[in-house]
Image (cartoon, rainbow over all chains, first blue to last red; front, side):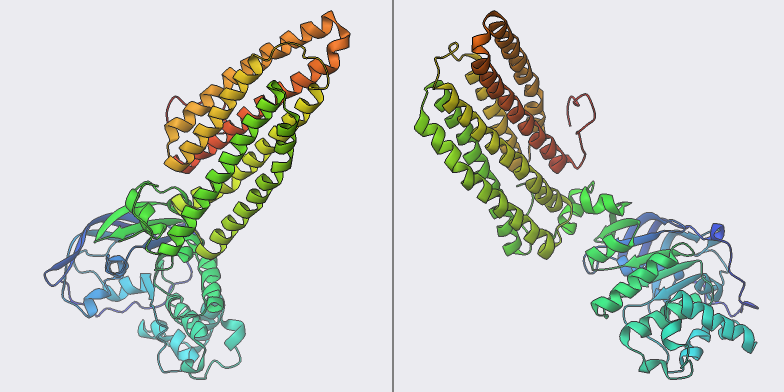
Length: 270
Length: 229
């Protein structure tokens, strides 16, 4: 594997127009942890400006699939990868790839809200600061824009310097989304972003996903099929490391093409 | 139904119950048509009255099936095949209920007609009733067996019923032209013919919905029937 690059982007670029949203293309992706192959040749796309949901039973490789897009799995595991992933014209597994730049382009939100034990402000600007931004006024702008995009601004604007861990679970998760948006990514990956949240907080996040899709390419892994049905434009069903079917979401949940998909979405699996 | 059972067996049981209820309603309605026609041809006033009285049972099943469907939709959030099955059941019962109403109106016409001398022996009406009943029975068979080809075959029989209806119409019009005194009786027979034609239409609707349920694509309101699905 290529070691993480040390180069740091000089500044956070301004928001690109919607047309510049990146299309994610995954081609013949074979992914292994150690000697265990978990993805056996996946071909699929995350269309720009859309939400792509990935569903499938536990262990089918759906989290691995999205983690392969920003190469985050490599941080904790020994992996080998064949095939290719591109984000726009950026070759994710190309030689000399800048992993910091990759992860700026491809943000991620995890299952459990994981804010840093710092203030709300410092959480949001963590990425931009990492990329070398120090200008206080610019950082404040980024905080407001990101928190507004994450539909959290109104709730926290008068206490930006309190510890993020004092927020509720749903607020913490929206803060994590704001933190991901602060570096102006093209793609946002979400790995079961609502599984630790109550139904109201879940609805807020789902609304947010809907609002964000006009500006970002979003991929969401979820165990909650109703959630996939509600938030996504297209849905992919993964089983045992293979892509069984990907189609428009309404098709997957009303009249899927494959029997395996039908059995899964109707709860007949296993 | 084809495919493995649900992980949740109670859900599976509820779906099975829904299937049974729809069949029960279909059986009842089919019997209503047969009795109404027998009451007309025999004639049998008591049987006609029984058909009218039994409509309550049909209506009751209609409500019961609706409630079962709503409960399944609300509590199970069905998807794909189950969603198509439940929404189809919901729509089928509307057609079954209407067929039941048509059987009742046939029984009412039967009682009116038996008070006067018979216009002519009933030949085409029982034939129409037989085809319409068979269409209904086969549409429900197609529903429980997930048989889209059978459903399509039912749709193709509708033309035969329409033709018989046209034939009866022409025949009765000539009767009325010859002798205006028979107009009332001829009109009543014509109504029966029209009701049977409507029953066949309802059976066709049911079959079209079954094709959607099985294949996930609609063949309704597209003009020509597809040769296969």
